[in-house]
Picture 1 (cartoon, one colour):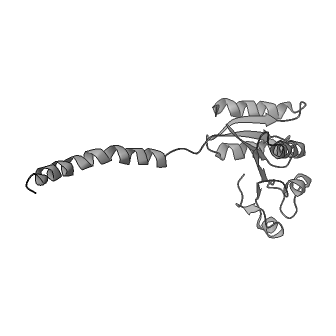
Picture 2 (picture 1 turned 30 degrees about the vertical axis):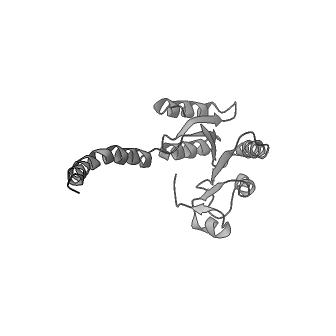
Length: 172
């Protein structure tokens, strides 16, 4: 028993030194950033582009890279998007589609759904109904309400009519 006491004393001194790397490793594991998500953004003209860029400015850098779909004839939106992206450019690899109502987003989202059904690429669809839709959904919203993973509305009246939706208040 006499020879065991010095060993216990040494172990008691070394134990904190052995635990420090484990504590550091656990802290790193907890502090990890969320995995990056590739984001497909469907831009409409005029107010839709302004709203979608406001939404994007609120997202973390985890939503990157961002890819855009817009009409060939919409040079103003293209210029706004280029300016916006010059300020925030990074590279990252899961997929997410963010749209807010232009009619062009419907075929894009349906295509993404088909790719998922075929097992080629799974994309999360986030639809944010335009701020101007107070009591009824847009046509795009009426279609994508049933297909989107997250359907966000900005007015409580819409949340009451569409229970699957998520009401966040005014976000743009």
